[in-house]
Image (cartoon, rainbow, N blue to C red):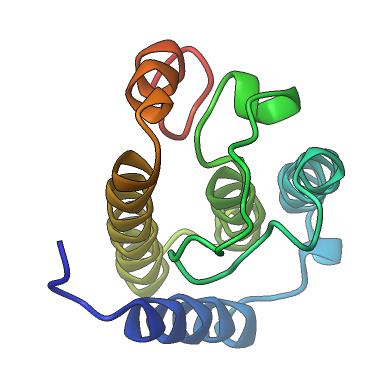
Length: 145
């Protein structure tokens, strides 16, 4: 699945995040926004504890020395960092749900989905155990999706 270049996906992801941050008020102006974004941020820190910086990659490419992580958040979902991004940005848009926010957030979901599909394809090529890991875990939302 080499339809879209990894760098383009990352560029679109960060561009959409920037747009959402620029057009919305601060999460500190709304308690619900602050709570949702904070949960995403804290969950992201928890996830990074298990996936060390040397193993982490914003591009959906597998580093040559990467190891499959299946502990912590990765025990339940295959892409917890994408889940964190969705939570944090969900907190950003929740204070002002409008058409532009919905469109941008939808694009962000699509981009993260495409990144995850590409990443999973690469992991499947790299190691046979990945198929078993996929069967045991959800893609984004623990126990749901």
